[in-house]
Image (cartoon, rainbow, N blue to C red; front, side):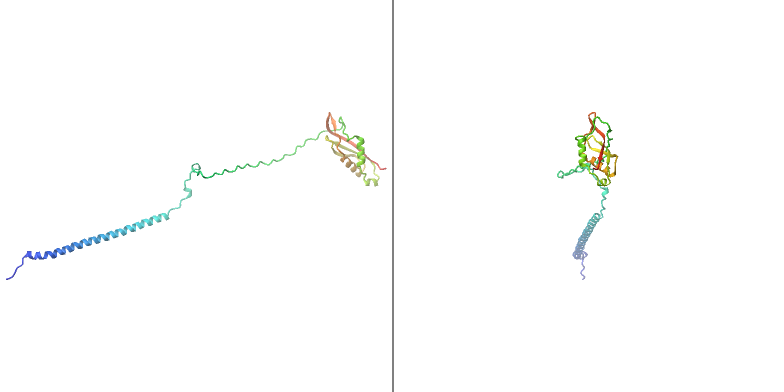
Length: 218
């Protein structure tokens, strides 16, 4: 007699292996899901790190490639807005006085000479009078040796001006004897001391005088 197994009994026997297979399949799916998630997270982290590196590198390049600032484009503050530290010592500028322009002297003022009086109220005189003048001439005249040898004698007529201060100027020979005697006569008159000046209305003036000097050989 053949023993017949029921369909339910067979299904009951296969339930356990099917359940195990289902659990294994589900576990595999879960494990695969976790593995895939880890891989995605890892890839995402790598991409994020790479992007952060690119951002830093780009920032560095921007800093390196920063264009130079043109000093002409810099906005300068006016001098009134510049703030000076109170501790800064301000040294005053020295006051330089320009030198005075040199004084250029003009041409000297030449006054016209005073009038020469030929006939004053008071004649100009030698100190002490005519006698003292004769003594002085005899004491100071030197007879030239050449004139002695050539026996030259005579009177030398001289004309000169006595200034208001008594000095002798403008000496000329009006009539002479010889060059040697004329030269000696002029030398003696130039050597004379100051005279007493002539006067007109009580005021000393320039006067003209004439004087003969006599040269004689004994």
